Image 1 (cartoon, rainbow, N blue to C red):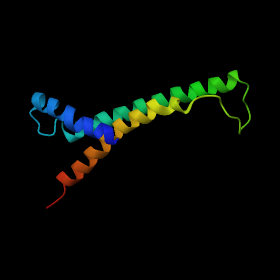
Image 2: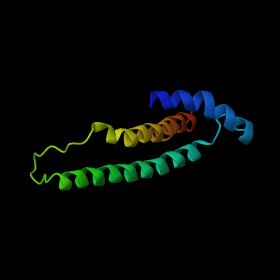
Image 3: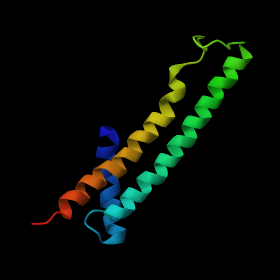
Image 4: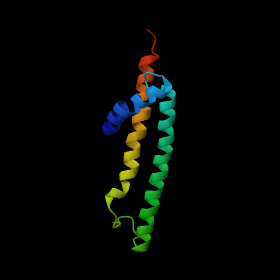
Length: 104
C-alpha cells in the first residue's frame, strides 16, 4: 500500500488534476468507488488462485485436511498487490472524507 500511495500521489494526481481541474485529482467518492471495484477484482483473483490450488491438489491426489499442495506462495502475489492498490483508494479517501466533512 505504501508503494501505491506514493505512485498515486506523485504520478496519478498531477495527471488527473490537468484533466479534471480538481486539486485532488478525482473526487473522494470516485476514489472510493474505484477502490470498491478493485476489491471485487481482488476477490475474483483470489477465486482463481484457490481454483488453481484445488486443481493442483486433485492432480497430486491430496485429499486429506493437512495435505501440502506443491505450489509456490507467489500465486497469492497478484491478489495481495491488487489489495494494496484497492486499499490505497478506499482507506485514504475514507480518511480524507472524514477530515474534510467533519463539523467545525
